[in-house]
Image (cartoon, rainbow, N blue to C red; front, side, top):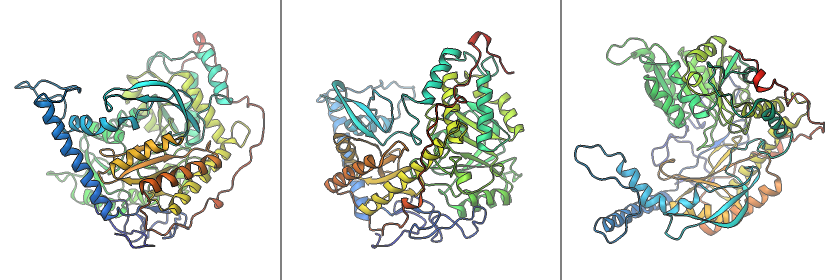
Length: 566
């Protein structure tokens, strides 16, 4: 239990999960010189993260809730086996000598737990996923086995999409540029990078991404997940060691496994644990032979989407240099949303891009497009262009998708002749500080960094998690709720994704809804003194009105005359 006014500074929650707390510095050691960090217990410093412990009585009720659901699930399965209840799920025959295709626990969980509440997920939408969106109403007459659409469209405030900078729009310079590009280049490149699919516009995107990141070169991939899973096996292999943060994304986990390298995880954002594993790797070497590792690759994310935390990059770079390791940084959620100019956690901490060996990110969040990139030195990128499966076996990015990225990135960089990009970055920062501060003051348990665009609100009990989603939707607020197995069993949560497109009126309305629903469901568990950070520190920017910039809709040759780059 946490006493009133106490900030938790321990190594683990009651459930054993580590969230980077050590030495009373929330994951920061006293050697953080690289980024000139300053952290305080009350949130007034430059770096503040909050991970309040799960209240003991809430943890007990959460485990009891899941226990009861599992017991009733087994009773229902027994009734199905003896023919009393009709079997509506997809099952497989028990054939001797054959390995089951379905895992029994996953099938059980989906059939008896998730099915009852799946109206809270996979909701169909029928509009642009901007600050507001329209959701098609569904109803189920058989308790979640099947759904039917009604004729109603629910207009809700959207707090569930990664529209960080508000570029999910149906009009404006980016949309006009994409429409013009479709007329000139069509909808697809119809080939991989190595088979006539690499056009002028793809080369322009690669060069623009490299300039934006501040690196020598970059390569772009049509799928964000594949950017990690298909490129990591090119970087390390057998005889190499991957040190991966325990909360890394599934694409990083899959890429690490496909590489064939040995994988060890370290506690989230815990620099002492990372250094201990680095020291052990250098001293002991490979198992059995004790030969030195061919490569040691540290794999981290910039912003962790479930926790809302920001990696302690200065210390990671310090350790990487000390032990001669390589660093792989995934900035899927931080690029565009973090830093004075939207250039991610490297800029946020005032670091040098060349200190990060492999810079990875996606275009699906801040840029409202699809695909991903890897940036680094020219030798690395040229190697990936030849060896990467994503370059050889997948089509290159469709030209309209590329144009959307070029247009949004040009605005963020100020190449359009306006300060629209700077305005959006500052507005996002103001919005997230404002919402996070108000939620702390209301008494909710909030995870993460004060500058993270993702704000997790801890709900814990599964029935309350579902009720929160339904009650918010009924009041005109669309949110994302997450539970086990995507989170630890005792840490179900709602996850708010902030956007520069959200106005203060929207935020106030959302806060009123959460305050009302929080009282209704009794979700205000926090005993921590509210932190002292404020949105008043953020200086908002007024937009200089100018005509649509001529630099956005680039003119390319018609498809039959598009020049190709080999």
